[in-house]
Image 1: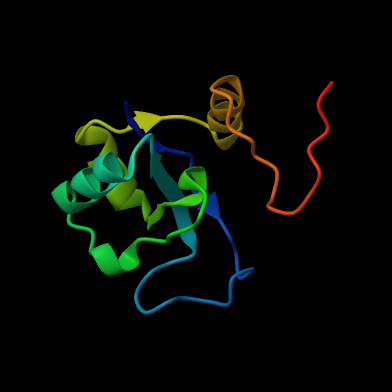
Image 2: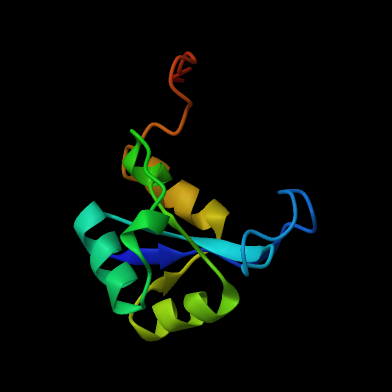
Length: 106
């Protein structure tokens, strides 16, 4: 079981400017379980209100600024590219297709 952080992305205005004091450079922190995700989030000082829920576990995440990402890595999060994480999920048998779309199996 693990917690993961992908790379920092600079959204450069594509998300409508600053949100409070938060810049447009951030990444996502996900985990194999919600318990692991929330424990590490609390350890690095994130508020539970910042959690972004989904009916799909692999979409549940926290957005992290560069400094929070560094704190997560120091606390044990695994650095992984978004593509590598998606490949890992597929290898684990997770269906990544959006709800309602047909899944083509070959």
